[in-house]
Length: 428
Image 1: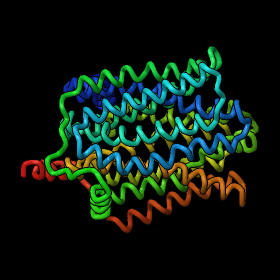
Image 2: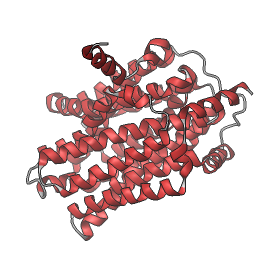
Image 3: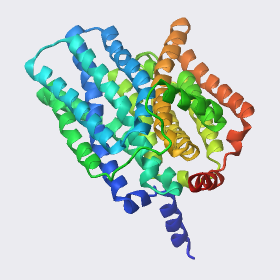
């Protein structure tokens, strides 16, 4: 085989595996609908805090927007996962899609009417977060029902890539919409985007509750939490993410670093916000490299090592282009970690517990970065933003090293062996 042919073969092997999109029409429609609606969601997530600031001129009020969303996300994330396991999931997704669209219509109406009511905006954020907390576990728990088990890493890579793309495109689109036509235009985009999501869900096949799933309630939620506690692999993957987000997430310090360390301004800060997503999107394009790894637990550990090291170097440098490169590298590593953690959880978890585990996962993903904002802000206040970022990155490295030592089964996790055990479980 010639060198050119070998290079071409290696390049094809490295790009993302789109087999789930080819093999499963249901997954393909769900992916496309979610890709469109995620952009609309990101538009609203930018438009709401900007509208709050335009009314109040208070950064504290803007910060409270995240708090308004966090409480419903935590509560309904756990309970929503139990609901997802206990009911027909297609009908549940149809209901949550309609409810979430109704909240977006309310946001559109208040902007068009010029109400300028901050309490109303907070209520809309809280209600929409509550419905999203029920929708997301149900939506993510059906992926193992739509694609072959061995194609879960590829499906998760595609899904995370779609979300990353929306994180880049949505804020840009929000800025253009608000600048051109006001907040009503931005919320109008969100409303329109839900049409695609609703159509995709409406075309899904029936997705009945698992035969052994109990009725949704406190006992059901506690059963899911006990399962997490008893599964060292899943618990370790959650702790790995919490460690990375609490100690290695300097997002709250981007404005201070932009003005102080890099002697820039708002434009410099915006580049910092975008850099991790750009790195994650690039890694999605190389998804073929991700999906071929069997030692996914080791992959999680190495990815978080890269994350923590990149963040520490980012905090130490005063060269902007190099700092952005480190953030992009951190974002790429986080994408790898997210794909492996999601896949491991989906493979290890029985069908009747998928929704509840996705709910716990969402709580971890939503809560970790917010605790990271608190940690980084507190250390920066006590010392300096640079010390906060560097020490956080180093603490992340120490934390993942300790976790690897305490849970050696995470290092030994083999995806093919786990898939075999899953097949035996389903057969029995």
